[in-house]
Image 1 (cartoon, one colour):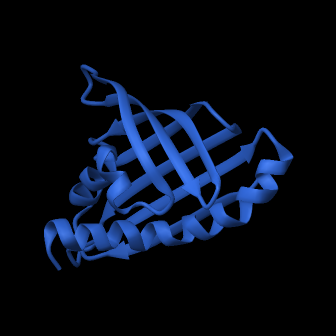
Image 2 (tube, one colour):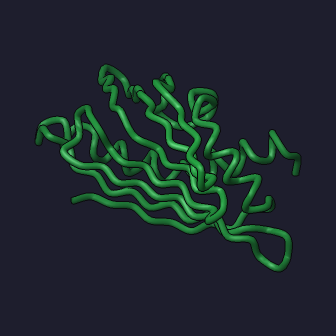
Image 3 (spheres, helix red, strand yellow):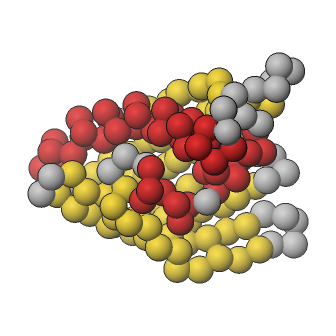
Length: 150
C-alpha cells in the first residue's frame, strides 16, 4: 500500500498550524489537487475534540474523484486524524501532528497511506498523488506565511 510520511519545521507555532490544517473549508484555495471541499456536519465533543465529515473532490487533468472522510480534531493533543468513509479508495489513513520547538518554530508531521479500489485508477493517480503529497508541506507553510505573516 502506498504511503508518504514527512516532518517539516515551520516558522509558526503548533497551535497556528493546527488551526490552519483544521480549517478544511479553505483547502480549495491552496491545497494541490483539491478542487472543492464541503463539510457535511460538525460536532463538538465534551472533551474538547471536534469531529466533522467532509467531502473532498480532487482533480487532475481529466480525472475527478470525490471522497468522504471523518476528520477528528484533537486540539489538546495537537493531532488531526482523518478516517476514510467512502469514495474511490479501498483504504485511506491520514494523521497530522504539531509540536512546538524551543526556538518558537514547530515541527509538522504528516502521514498518509492509501490504496485505490481500482488498479487502473491506482495506476493513473498513484504517481500524481505521490507528487502532490510532496507539495503539501510547502503549500501549508506558504499558506501559514500568508495568514500569519513571515
